[in-house]
Length: 290
Image (cartoon, rainbow, N blue to C red; front, top):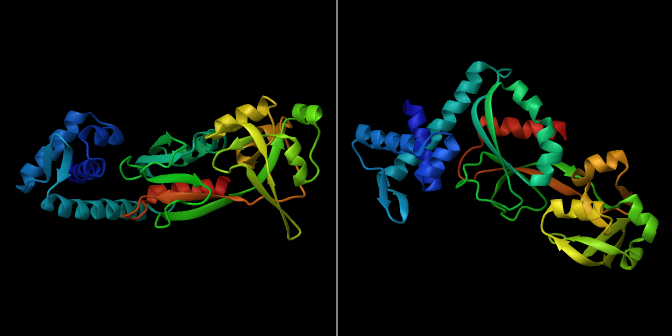
């Protein structure tokens, strides 16, 4: 590996605490990463990592080198992009994280356009409904919805999605259509655990909260989608989560005169380093297509 690639490998090792994890993120074998770090230590004539049964820990010299190397990689990335010009494509590897259902419905079908614009770029898409650690997983940018749990996160708001109460026509035909929020107490709710069983609506400045009852709860959007489509009840969800079905009429909105709070979509970048040009370009792309 050349000097910049060696620094990249070392930065990944420090951030993940593992040769194997760093190798997986970079897309090479573990022996290659181990050899690169060993050669780096030999060239610098200083020990950068302490290897023990508990993992890898940077020495004081290693931490100083890590901070400088991280900044150097960032500056090289920016310099290359600027030299190529604004219209040039990006290159290298970009690791993106997003919730499974949102990515499957709204991002992946549009990804070919982004790849076409940047033919030398490789994209790793990590699908996970959990809030994962961006640094340890080597994520360049994560797409997250709702309120951000970490107020110190480096984030940028990309879009606001409408929330609606939805159900299938078959369910509404069997159980009737609610006309006001209070009618929801007569229906079965498909509950998303993150939203709970109290749904709050607003109409012309008037707020109405209703406690719903539901025999099933789900921790992930895929469960909500499957239950609604199986005619199990009504659900509060972002329109993004049922976009294809809403377009085809397979799922319908109800209580459309009553507004629910929108859900924000954020691009979240790893804390402690500047967002890379590749990460910013991907965030721009998502903002544009949504």
